[in-house]
Each structure stands twice: as structure tokens, then as C-alpha cells.
Length: 238
Image (cartoon, rainbow, N blue to C red; front, side):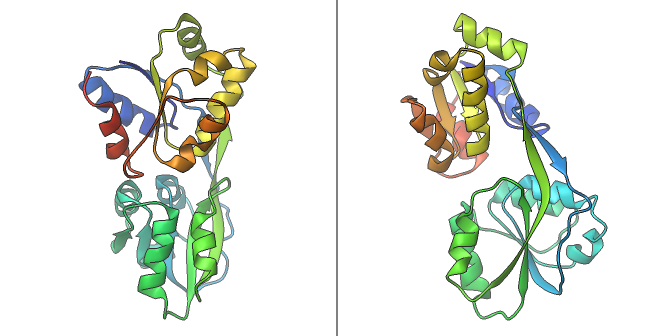
């Protein structure tokens, strides 16, 4: 199957390698560029735990002056990949919600509902608010620190545009609602929106699929769990 992977570097390469190992023809086209914000204001501690809903948060904290202070704290991560990224940068006590932001919020409420202290949420500039909405109903104090931003591409790279024009693409993988929206916007600017919406769209969650549904895409497949492995299971071997 001829597939397009739109997630940011370096994760696009790993995903492409897995798909290529299953004998798919893969085109990489990152539509978001991640920029860490090493001068981000984390606010005043002390904090009782760190929260992450993206692997990018773990990577971004590496360059922050307060990294060593945070490494001593327990981490609550949205899913397994984010948990692994937290371990990789030096956090020792990491718990995964194995789900989405709402699942993470429920886990935090169950584990820390009686805790008197501040939670530090290492967040992206553009993010879903599921976690913040979930915690708003519980007696937990959340400090949000934006430590990275995702800069959107303005246009499709030439190989992607040519693949859409020629009808060589069959499917596209979407890992975030933002990247799905950027894909549609870039396709529209190139005059290729009709070709784009006709592809099979493999989405990490229903939230990720929302911009595609709104644009008229009907061949949408949603992962059983918001994890890369579940998304790749939708595709299977060639």
C-alpha cells in the first residue's frame, strides 16, 4: 500500500521503517516542526508530580534549566510512548494512563485526588484541553507550562504534491488533529483537496479524525486505542 506519514521528525522515520518492514511503500512528509522553548516559565513549585501528554514534552525539557529539579518527581504520562520518552530523558517514576487526555485526567484524580499540592503540566502551545477539563472538576491544582510549539508547514513538499496529483497515494496516517488540519489546508492551497479527502485516513483517535470528517472525508479508520501500535494494526501487512 502507498502511504503518507505526516508526523513530525524524528518519529516519522520510525513509523516509516515499521511500515516499510511490512512491505508498504512509504512517503514521509512532516507537516509540523517541533520547537522546544528552553526559556519557558514553569511557575513556582514545589510540585508533587509532572504531567505529559506528548513525547515532545519529554524531549523539550532536556534543554530547560530546571530539568534536574523535575527529574526527582513522579511523572504521569498519557500513553506508553510518552512514558518511554520520559524514562529516556531521566525520569525514574513514570506511570502511563494507556489512553488519552481524559483517561489521564481520571488517573490523576484517582491517584492524587487527596493530594494537597501543585501538578506541573508540560504542554505544547497548541493542545487539546481534555486533561484540563477533566481536572477542573477535581480538587487538583494544575500549573500549565508551555515548553514547546509545533510550527505548521505552509505547503506540501513537492514529492507529496506529485503523489497526490498522480493518484499514487492510497492512504495517510494522522497522529494529531493539528497535523490532520494542516494536511487539509496544504492540500487546499495546492488545489488538491478533492484528491486528499478521497484517501484512506488512518487516525490515532476520533478527535484526530474530526477535521477530516468536517472536510468530507469518508474513508476514515480510527485506532482502537490512541497508540501507534493500534494505529499500525489498522493497516496490517501489505
